[in-house]
Length: 88
Image 1 (tube, rainbow, N blue to C red):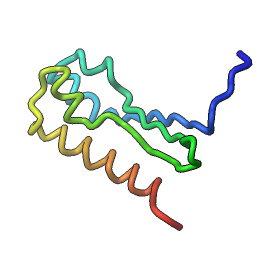
Image 2 (image 1 turned 30 degrees about the vertical axis):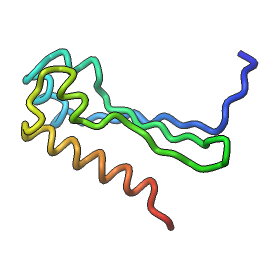
Image 3 (image 1 turned 120 degrees about the vertical axis):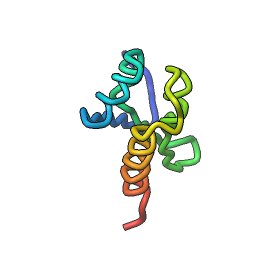
């Protein structure tokens, strides 16, 4: 489209063992699945990794924040993003 954009990557990932129980609790949660993480370079050259916390997804769809699937989803997302930002 002829537009400029600093380096940006979008990672989408899903796991039926996590997503299905969430959708069984509230099918509208499927609107926000698979989960997405965006990595982008800001104007200063710093790389940022951002995502919506699973607790936000739970609140948006009326799922209890302390539901077991939410803890699993939060843990999986944390492992993924921590690995991505870890220094080599």
